[in-house]
Length: 146
Image 1 (tube, rainbow, N blue to C red):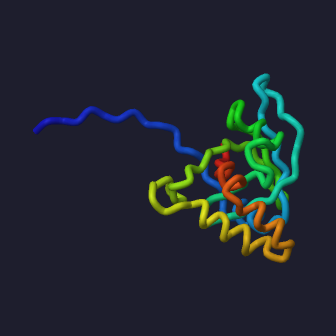
Image 2: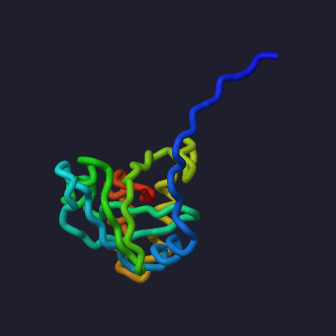
Image 3: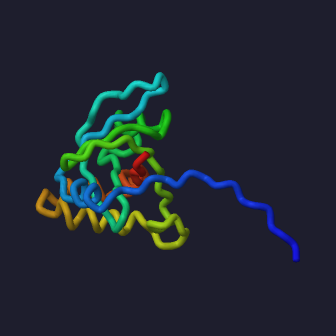
């Protein structure tokens, strides 16, 4: 019988607690700050946030040209605060064709669009159209606690 070499253990990515998911998911807005190249937090911005299952998602209503979004490009790390929860996070870019598990083919942006429409549907149709546009969708990120 042949033995298989042991696979080195890798640290598990921390998960959101159910309380954190509920608190952030029910919050109207989220404060976000990117970690700059020098390791300091940048300016905080107020943005909209949606929860889907065990994931927290954000996007830039103004697309990739937005200052706060451009700030996430340097280190893909930062800090968020919403619903009484303050957490250091990693910004994980969402590919247009991936589902919530990262599997290609399900189109997660459609689900994120629907979540934004449901949560913020009381706002003007123009505002909802902007946050669910292809331009905004190209900036969709999943927030991963760290």
